[in-house]
Length: 307
Image (cartoon, rainbow, N blue to C red; front, top):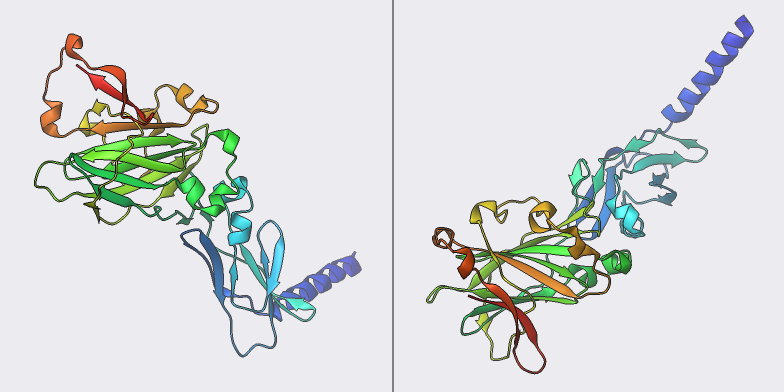
C-alpha cells in the first residue's frame, strides 16, 4: 500500500513539474472589432522558442502572441450566437504550460458574457426631399458577408431598426429585403439629421445581435424619386426605446408573431413614435385612419392611411 501511495505522489510531481517547466501565457484577452474577433496574450521574450495552442471547439497553433478567431466565430450561426471563450497553452518541445482561459464573449445580446460583441451599422444615405428626407442603407444580413454566409435564409431573420430625428422616432422591421428605405418627415427650417441603431433577430426572436448606433448623419439634396417601403402608425412616445442602448423589444413591436412566419413575403414595417403634441390629440374611433393602397406610379405601391 505504501508503494502505491509513493507511486501516486511520484506521478503527481512529474505532472506538476511537466506544467511548471513552461510558464503559461498572461493576460489572455478576446476583443471584437466589428465582425473581426481576435485573441491576444503576453509572454516573456526571454523564453525559448514557444508555440501557442489555441483551443476553441478545436485547436490551432501559432508562434505569434495573437490569433484571428473570425473564421471560427462566423463558421456557423450557432457559433456566433453561442457562449464562447478561448484557452491558450504554451508549448516548448515536449513540455507545455497549463491552459489559460480568456474572457467569455458572444454576438448574442441575450448571453451573459464578459465581452458583448456587436456590429457597426451599415453605411447610411440620407437624401433631402420636399417633405423631409429619405433614409436608406443595405440590410446588415446582406451587407456583412459573415452574416450572409451563416444566416439561414429560410429562417426569416428580422432586422429591427430605430431612426431618431429631431421630432420623431421610427421603428422599422425588414424581412428579406436587400435595401432598407424610410421617409422621415422634418419640421420646416430644421436641419435634417438622423441617428440609427438596430437589432437582428432570428425567426423565433430568441437570439439578438446588436447593430451599434451611428453618429449623427445629415441629409444632402436629392432630385430622384423616393420609393416608400413601409407604413407609419402613431404610438405613445413613452414606449419608445430610441434613447436606450438595449435591443428593441420584440413583444412591443410584434404582438402577433405571425408577421415573422410569412413564408416568402418581402416586408418592411415601420412604426412612427410621435411627439408629445401628437400624444395629446384625441382621436375618435370613427375618425381613426383606415389603411389604403396608394399607387406612386411605375408600379410602386405603398400602404397609406386616410381619415
